Length: 137
Image (cartoon, rainbow, N blue to C red):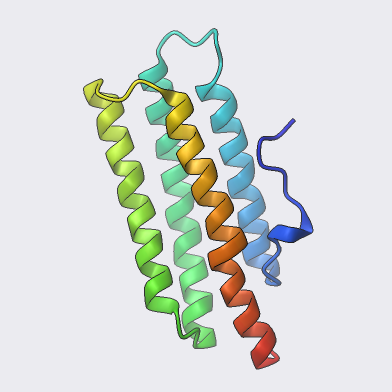
C-alpha cells in the first residue's frame, strides 16, 4: 500500500501538473519501499540513489510547474520558486550527510520528504489552484 496515495484532494486543477504530482508520489512511494527495506544492507547507497531520483524528477516537475505559474501571472511565483530551490538544496544536504555517514536514519530522511510533499502539494500548490479559480482560467 502506498505511503502517500493520490486522491482528488491533491488535484490542483491542471492535468499536466496533476499527472506529474501522481508520478512524483509514485517515485516517492518506491523510494520509501527501498529505503525502508529491512533486508537492505547498504542503507546509505540506497538512500542516495532514491534521493537522486527524487531530486531529478522534482527538478523536472519544478521547471514545468514554474513555467505554468509564470505564464498565468501567479503573484506568489517567486516565493514558490524559492520553496522549490530550498527543497532541492535540502535533498542535496541529505545526500551529503548520507555520503559522509553523518546521517544514517533513512526513516528520518524519507519522513522529511513525505512531510514536504504533502505540505507543498496540499498547501502551497493549492494557492495556485485558488488563484486560477479566482481568475476564471
